[in-house]
Length: 156
Ligand code: CUA
Image 1 (cartoon, rainbow, N blue to C red):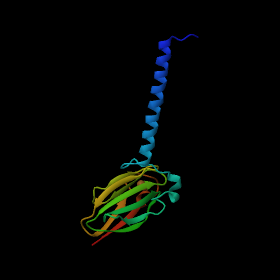
Image 2 (image 1 turned 60 degrees about the vertical axis):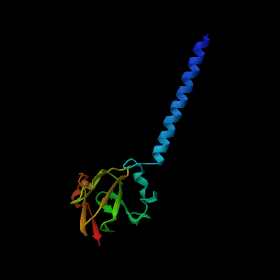
Image 3 (image 1 turned 120 degrees about the horizontal axis):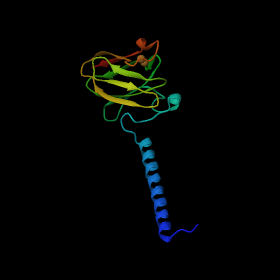
Image 4 (image 1 turned 180 degrees about the horizontal axis):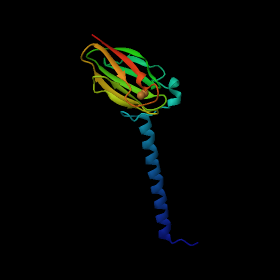
């Protein structure tokens, strides 16, 4: 086969463009995986026990005085089952599922998020009034769906 000089140049150019394109795609995919933004963070649902922060669910106070709640949903309940947070402070809930799609819906607030296995969902809320708040599952997830709940005690 005999290739004309210009064809060779164009072939090399096309090949180089392909390499550049693949590198850019590869690098951006890599960056997305490592600097996740809300709701896009990925996690292995079968290995939550060994994956921070889900290896230790609970309430954490951050350096800026706000709070972070790490929670796991699974058929048919949440971990932890009961938490305490202060009123008037920002609380960010980071939730994932161990099995099927659930929801994390705090009654009487606008927090109502889907909880999908493999993904981390996140929502920030400030409880203005002390009291007991109930978290329920709004996504039908099986026979024990109606029993899924978690309690938040908001203290002064
Ligand atoms: Cu979990 Cu419905």
